[in-house]
Length: 295
Picture (tube, one colour):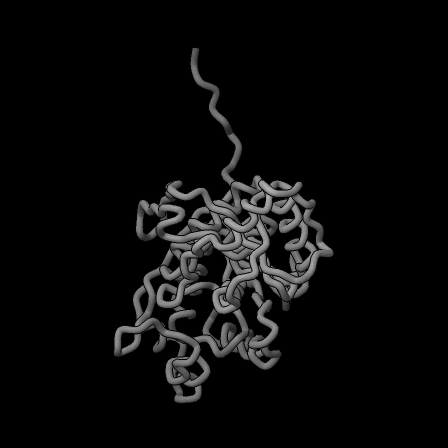
């Protein structure tokens, strides 16, 4: 008996660039975003722009307008975004809080997360995309153990959204291996409890952490491939656990090598001399700038 061949077309490629307006874009952002644009263009797909503006303390309106101006000047073209709309609007994360709350409540009702009252230093880091040099530290499980002990002494209270402000962590299964195929670096694997621990998904300020927000958005916006920096490889392992817990299909991943400064450190927004805005003011053209790196 011969196999029946499917004539169904593969899903259209959907990629995204997702800057955070906490400073001016630099060469590292440009190279990663350019890779995302090229991969979308090569496959005849759609590229969207998402404004990841959840950091209320650091996201500034002037950085949003500068971000859009610098991206257009450099040669980026997107099909959906906060400036042009699209079928999955809004494209500003600050306007998508209801979606994040629904995902939080789903995790809460299924027992995947627990309240945490520990140090706020790592909680603040969870708002932004973690980086290799200051990644979220492995959580020692202080509040997880306290919750387990309390559960043996008294009936477990049903969590509600109206509870006092507190942070919430996703409970990982220590020793579980999370593996995925990266489009650039190949096979990757991380061990829960060793390479990363219980991680923050919701902050006491009433906002989602980076890990939860991007999972919700990438799934809702039907992103087929996430292109981003290599400093987020561990974050991908965490996010795969969230995709599974929420019953969502994860995208493919392609992590780009990081751009380093002369001292060998990863470029950051504090490197004003290498910001697109500064290079433009110095008379550099986008073509010249793209000549600084290979995609």
